[in-house]
Image 1 (tube, one colour):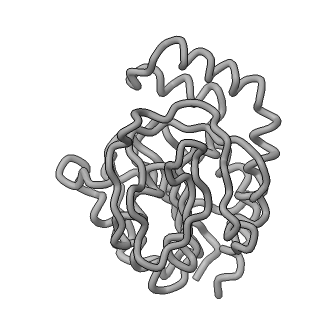
Image 2: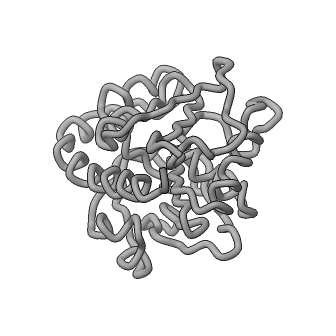
Length: 233
């Protein structure tokens, strides 16, 4: 096995971006929506990152590559391959491993929101390095409403929604977007149907908070890369 991390990207405007820079390892980025094949297994990859997207975790009919992504997540869970799901990727891990994702009854989460850590996060192999007060950039309509059996809740939003979880011993998910900056987020406004005032306030907050967010989430990438590096070559 190499130390290359497989990245599954679901649409043009949510690449791994800042997280890819911070991981500082070889990335094998696959874009199945453009026709890229997904590997049949993870035997040639040290870790898996599954990115966000506008589709839902249950939209297999309209995004026909999603079942293959879920199968890779199940394989990662079974074989102990470090996996990180971001937003949609977090929701796909939930569904792949037997949990449930539904539209948020409270409506869209949008903006820089406080991450409210659970006690378990302070002992977690991945999240312990970041389990102190910090904010994450959110843009999501769906939420995890039931975690997979055996999963551990790692963080909740102040309004109660699941923000982070360890879905399996080596499979983690975050509902926020650690990879974004203001230019990337601004691109989402074109098709995102967001409230203009809230969107502009969020963009301004992202600009002001660039250093804060880098300090918040660069350690998450570094810890994940370290977990990937432990995989046998």
